[in-house]
Length: 213
Picture 1: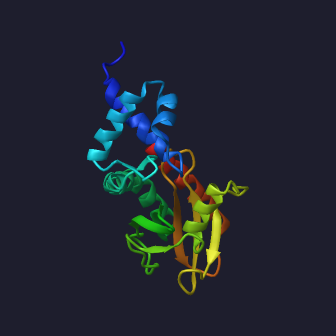
Picture 2: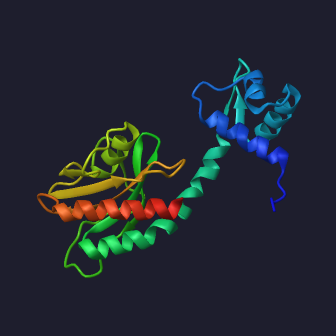
């Protein structure tokens, strides 16, 4: 039996998805054609979404995603962090290095979850909320490789000394998770990353991606 749904809510969500997929916005006519509804319906949908700051219209009348979606987006991080923690804990304990989940935040990489190993004498301190450019460090570079379609064997990224002197990193991107750009990785005090670490990071990234689907 098909669950009862709201047609208006469905259309409103479709409007947001359509606007999220374009950089230049859409006109009422374009939205009307894509949704298969008349312009009056689109006007009402946009007016409602504007009241909640989820949509804005520029001087030319083109509708774009509004700043209100950022408030909703901030609530995504705790949910993603909760889903990723089991895999991160297992990774940190197995490798004996600090494990982290990193996500894109604008032009930066943002650590949204960090797990340190419990049995090592020392490890790299890495805190939740740490930011760095996407093009520096294994976590950001792994994300960029997936974004640019440059993923090849072995599927993970290795770096050394890019964010902290003497520290090496390994990270693999989250693949197949709609609406999320991120990576799972480890950082350790070493001149290089052992091959098994890269493979283990790749497995952990797949675990996290599966948990988020």
